[in-house]
Image 1 (cartoon, rainbow, N blue to C red):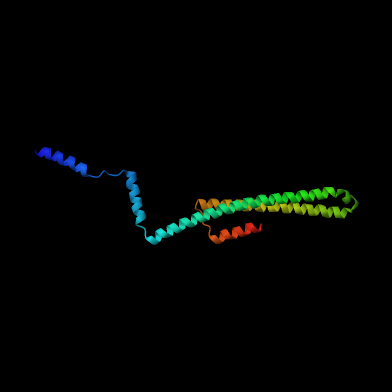
Image 2: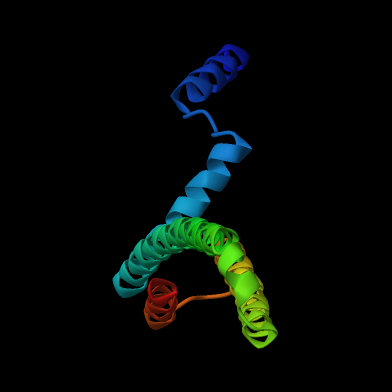
Length: 161
């Protein structure tokens, strides 16, 4: 009778025991408990930082789009201006033949200066695009933090370009 009682007791005890959770769910429960043990201020600060991070990512994306849009617009303006100057020079080339060599040299020099300015502006835009892209990558990879004043300064510089 004792043996039967022991077997019955073991089976009954196994029935009443709750099944042990798997290792993954135990780990998740421990992690959840660790999250709950944070002070409310820390938890609220983490939430605030998450929101600020999301906002910064959105701002970096918008700055990047703005930079790309402005770069395209400036390139188109430069091409249009160059084509207008070229058309003007070609249409008035007959008039230039009658002018002195000094005036032709001045126009040639001004055209070269203009071309150099165009090249410099395109290089500056390219550098700005690459720096914004690098900053974006660093923010995404959390190697760098960007504060709002830096983002506003970049937007101001881009709006003036």
